[in-house]
Length: 138
Length: 153
Image (tube, rainbow over all chains, first blue to last red; front, side, top):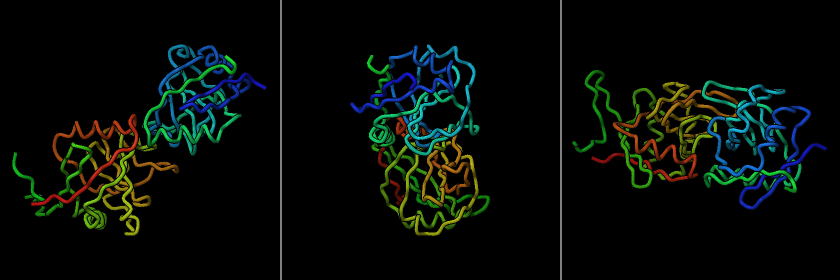
């Protein structure tokens, strides 16, 4: 079992497991950047996903690891340099103005997925929300 | 500023276009529909007016807000005046989902399957920066409301 983190939005918490085997460098940097309290917004190109800015601590991560384009529900992915991290609650694919692009998988939700994804799906109608990402038991 | 009319006559092609008002909150802009280039879509939308619809930010198409217009669903519309990218100020319709796209920046008609064709149905007239800002705000503020009406003489 990998190291675990928590997401909290609107007092709903989910537990996720870092993808340390798939993205050892990126997931370590993300772990080191926690805790994060930032704004969760809805994506405008990537479908049923929300995103946040992990911050400058991930600027040194310049390479993709085991890259994917599809973002499965409950999966957290990140662009190189930590420019943005996306959480999918439905059908998601990383896209930009010029088309599809790749991301690195950082973590996947393993506890309370349904309630948490329902909560972040409401960002589309209710607008941006605050998200807290922490080490489990921090 | 002259009083807007519900039609515009173009000297070159002698075509008459239907004009609409589009309101988000207290901000109202005017636009015109391409009756000549998209006759079926224009007629269906015109027949549905006035209408108040929910306005949300695009999830796949980029810098645009969208509104689903249920009366267009039953019209069996096909793509007319075909475009993929929607320029700022464009009013585009994705027929398969009865969705109007209101572009304020870089926008491409997309669904979960990828790029799709849209009907370039009309355009917003004149300086529209305040209107564009309200479209953009739906990403941060969530769903809003939009009223589309025929322009009256």
